[in-house]
Picture 1 (cartoon, rainbow, N blue to C red):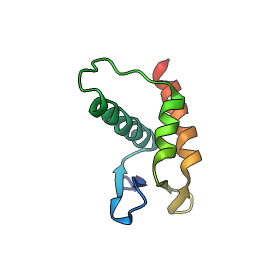
Picture 2 (cartoon, one colour):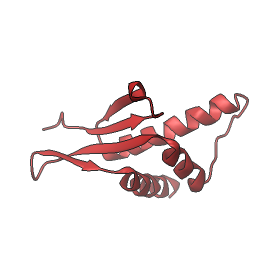
Picture 3 (cartoon, rainbow, N blue to C red):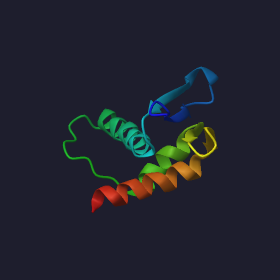
Picture 4 (tube, helix red, strand yellow):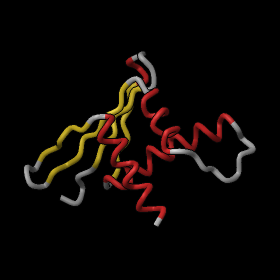
Length: 102
Protein backbone atom coordinates (compact mmCIF):
# COMPACT_ATOMS: atom_id res chain seq x y z
CA UNK A 1 0.00 0.00 0.00
CA UNK A 2 2.96 2.31 0.41
CA UNK A 3 3.17 2.67 -3.36
CA UNK A 4 -0.26 4.32 -3.71
CA UNK A 5 -0.06 7.92 -4.81
CA UNK A 6 -1.85 11.17 -5.40
CA UNK A 7 -2.05 11.88 -9.11
CA UNK A 8 -2.59 15.37 -10.51
CA UNK A 9 -4.06 15.43 -14.01
CA UNK A 10 -3.49 18.65 -15.90
CA UNK A 11 -4.22 20.05 -19.31
CA UNK A 12 -2.60 23.43 -19.92
CA UNK A 13 -4.54 24.33 -23.08
CA UNK A 14 -7.60 23.18 -24.94
CA UNK A 15 -5.31 21.04 -27.09
CA UNK A 16 -5.68 17.50 -25.67
CA UNK A 17 -2.02 16.78 -26.44
CA UNK A 18 -1.05 19.09 -23.56
CA UNK A 19 -2.71 16.69 -21.09
CA UNK A 20 -0.22 15.32 -18.61
CA UNK A 21 -0.07 13.84 -15.15
CA UNK A 22 2.21 14.14 -12.16
CA UNK A 23 2.50 11.40 -9.56
CA UNK A 24 3.16 12.31 -5.91
CA UNK A 25 3.55 10.24 -2.76
CA UNK A 26 1.14 12.38 -0.73
CA UNK A 27 -1.49 15.08 -1.02
CA UNK A 28 0.93 17.55 0.59
CA UNK A 29 3.57 16.82 -2.02
CA UNK A 30 0.98 17.20 -4.77
CA UNK A 31 -0.04 20.63 -3.46
CA UNK A 32 3.64 21.62 -3.24
CA UNK A 33 3.90 20.52 -6.88
CA UNK A 34 1.04 22.82 -7.91
CA UNK A 35 2.77 25.74 -6.17
CA UNK A 36 6.09 24.82 -7.80
CA UNK A 37 4.44 24.91 -11.25
CA UNK A 38 3.16 28.42 -10.56
CA UNK A 39 6.51 29.56 -9.16
CA UNK A 40 8.25 28.19 -12.27
CA UNK A 41 5.89 30.25 -14.42
CA UNK A 42 6.68 33.36 -12.36
CA UNK A 43 10.42 32.75 -12.85
CA UNK A 44 9.90 32.35 -16.60
CA UNK A 45 8.06 35.67 -16.74
CA UNK A 46 10.69 37.45 -14.62
CA UNK A 47 14.01 35.56 -14.59
CA UNK A 48 15.67 38.13 -12.28
CA UNK A 49 13.15 37.43 -9.51
CA UNK A 50 15.03 36.08 -6.47
CA UNK A 51 12.52 35.83 -3.64
CA UNK A 52 9.16 34.61 -4.85
CA UNK A 53 6.05 35.72 -3.05
CA UNK A 54 2.51 35.80 -4.36
CA UNK A 55 -1.06 36.22 -3.31
CA UNK A 56 -3.29 33.14 -3.04
CA UNK A 57 -5.62 34.87 -5.50
CA UNK A 58 -2.83 34.89 -8.09
CA UNK A 59 -2.26 31.17 -7.56
CA UNK A 60 -6.01 30.54 -7.93
CA UNK A 61 -6.02 32.55 -11.19
CA UNK A 62 -3.20 30.34 -12.46
CA UNK A 63 -5.15 27.21 -11.50
CA UNK A 64 -8.33 28.58 -13.10
CA UNK A 65 -6.38 29.42 -16.27
CA UNK A 66 -5.57 25.75 -16.89
CA UNK A 67 -7.94 24.11 -19.35
CA UNK A 68 -8.36 21.12 -17.02
CA UNK A 69 -7.06 20.20 -13.58
CA UNK A 70 -8.11 17.33 -11.36
CA UNK A 71 -6.70 14.85 -8.88
CA UNK A 72 -6.95 11.15 -8.16
CA UNK A 73 -6.22 10.32 -4.52
CA UNK A 74 -5.84 6.79 -3.24
CA UNK A 75 -8.27 6.05 -0.40
CA UNK A 76 -7.17 3.09 1.70
CA UNK A 77 -10.68 2.55 3.10
CA UNK A 78 -12.01 1.59 -0.33
CA UNK A 79 -8.70 0.42 -1.82
CA UNK A 80 -9.19 2.66 -4.81
CA UNK A 81 -8.76 6.16 -6.20
CA UNK A 82 -11.25 8.96 -5.63
CA UNK A 83 -11.51 11.83 -8.13
CA UNK A 84 -11.35 15.45 -6.99
CA UNK A 85 -11.90 18.64 -8.94
CA UNK A 86 -10.14 21.97 -9.34
CA UNK A 87 -11.96 23.52 -6.34
CA UNK A 88 -10.76 20.72 -4.06
CA UNK A 89 -7.20 21.29 -5.27
CA UNK A 90 -7.49 25.02 -4.56
CA UNK A 91 -8.79 24.36 -1.02
CA UNK A 92 -6.08 21.80 -0.28
CA UNK A 93 -3.39 24.12 -1.66
CA UNK A 94 -4.58 26.91 0.65
CA UNK A 95 -4.53 24.52 3.63
CA UNK A 96 -1.00 23.45 2.70
CA UNK A 97 0.26 27.02 2.37
CA UNK A 98 -1.30 27.95 5.73
CA UNK A 99 0.44 25.00 7.35
CA UNK A 100 3.79 25.96 5.80
CA UNK A 101 3.37 29.57 6.97
CA UNK A 102 3.15 28.57 10.65
